[in-house]
Length: 183
Image (cartoon, rainbow, N blue to C red; front, side):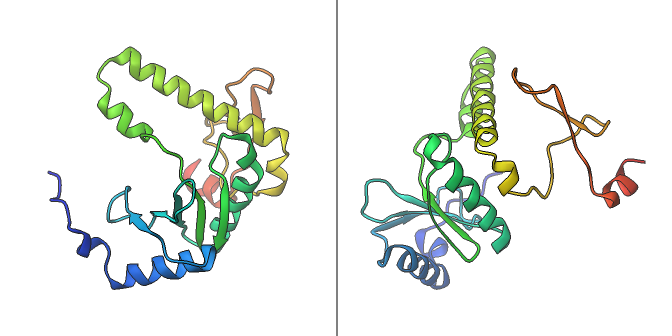
């Protein structure tokens, strides 16, 4: 059962208001015109209208290292048009341009026709391949270390589903995962 919608005073309390103001002033030197929480009230991300061409997403990450890594990735791939452009990284917050549109899970939920759903998934996978290709061309893997690699097929290799790349590439899992989960 869905929870009833909350009013704005429940979502935008004093602490959150101070945080939004501090972040927007740190990055833009001013408070936002409007703020929205499109991901829901439990999410720490928000969209701020800073009275510029497009709004910006302020997304809180678990720690500074995650925010820094995301910043490296967005800075490197931002000019490709496949990912949002980075505006700033502040502590464990990433500030990026807001990409308009409906999120894939929402589109899939709203699409009943299976052929249409398959086309949406295929287009999404093609976008991921484009991002992977752009990252490969910029040698991003040398500048952005991964904590976890792609899921394996059970034999220590991950499958790459694009022509022009090897069919498999070696993965090394941390020993504690191999010891506890792969035996």
